[in-house]
Length: 117
Image 1 (tube, rainbow, N blue to C red):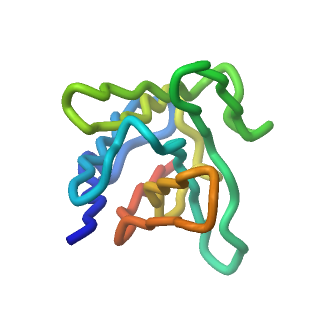
Image 2 (image 1 turned 45 degrees about the vertical axis):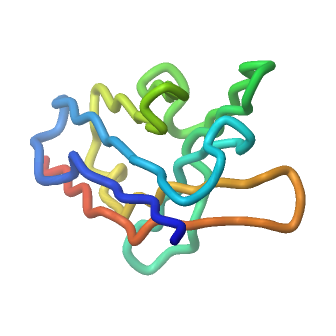
């Protein structure tokens, strides 16, 4: 059974930091590109950060460049999102995403991050 289990969300004041974790199971983690998406209240889901296997190619959304860092640990089947200098407009539900470079996509259940001013 495929699972992506996010943790580490919560509430923080502006300027603070959080680290999200996503533990994967049920598929060959090293064969997948891993990403984080988010969906702010009333808005569409958007890419936050993506990290490809092997090549290590990384993509960040414009709003988070320089503040967020994505890291994967293939030995632990885990992908992290380190979020620094958080702002109120970072408030969203954050989703872990796995893609096998083909037709298979997996989503986590989502985790709330709330940043207060």
